[in-house]
Length: 180
Image (tube, rainbow, N blue to C red):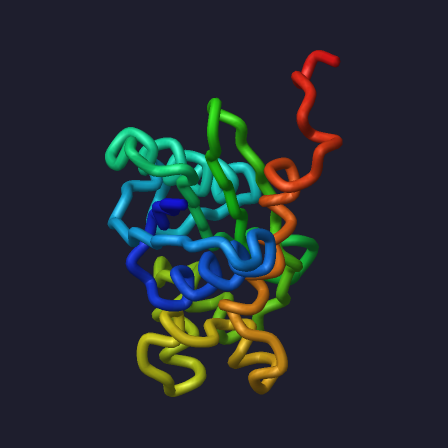
């Protein structure tokens, strides 16, 4: 099986590996990380924009590397809910026949210091690095790891959502046309 990961971010690639290993145990899988445009802003600022970014990455990966079995787009985003800036991500998996599975991660409230930097135009990963005095945290545990003292990590949260996004490909109840 060949799986194209629409990112070269090590945390995202590990999440895809983890999810596919769980949903396709014992299967020989080749992972192909590629840089793919999301078609949305570098820092998506809404649920819809984030979901579009993940879907676009999966679809664009299918066009760029057509000889694969699955194409995976992952997109982290933020949105303001009440008075909190919240972080989350969408996963989109494009599979055989154009079938798409999607899932969203849990939502993480971000501290006011991070919100101020993001509202001033800084990307979330850079804002986290400044507030938490880290370097390149988005390639490691991300905001999830920083705020939960490593109990949850970006990779783990993404793996969980990807397992869910793969459900339409591994559960026979999804083997019918969407119109039935």
